[in-house]
Structure formats: C-alpha cells, structure tokens
Image 1 (cartoon, one colour):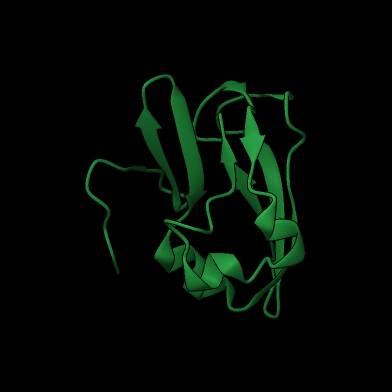
Image 2 (tube, helix red, strand yellow):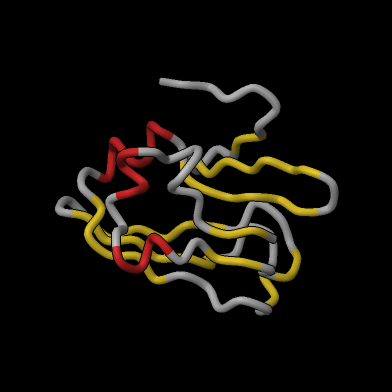
Length: 103
C-alpha cells in the first residue's frame, strides 16, 4: 500500500492533504482496492458545509456501496468534476487524479 508523504489518514481509509487553508480529500489505495471497480459516486455540493466524521460522499462499486466520511469540518470549495463521468478514476489514481473534494 502506498503511503503519501505529508498526507493524513483516518481509520476509515480517507486521506487528507492540507495546503495553505484548503484540504484535498480522497480515499486510500487500500480503500479503493477493497471496494473493487468503482462504478458510481455521489459527490457533495460545492459550497455545502460538512461536519467532521459525518458521511459526505457515497460510492458504489461492483462489490458494495460505501459511505465516505469527512475527515474535517468546513465548506466544500470544489469537487472533482472528472469523477462524475469516470468514477473509476479513483481506482486508477486515488491520490492524484482521483481526489474527491476540497474543503
């Protein structure tokens, strides 16, 4: 399993990378592997408020549906628009191109 330097991880296998005052959020290599091929993702709305440890994203895969929890509280400033058309991007590049949202 790949561990990214300077990233923080939750016990539910979400990652967070904080730069300046913005945190990019995604799921770990382990989580995407355990889920299998991701076929659908329900992203949060931009400008919505999220609470730490609350469900803010849902993903569906060939194996299961799973909730993703917010690793911090704040306002969603951006979601990854590429995931709506290609949710499998998380499987191929969970840390770089497959990020989920910025808080």
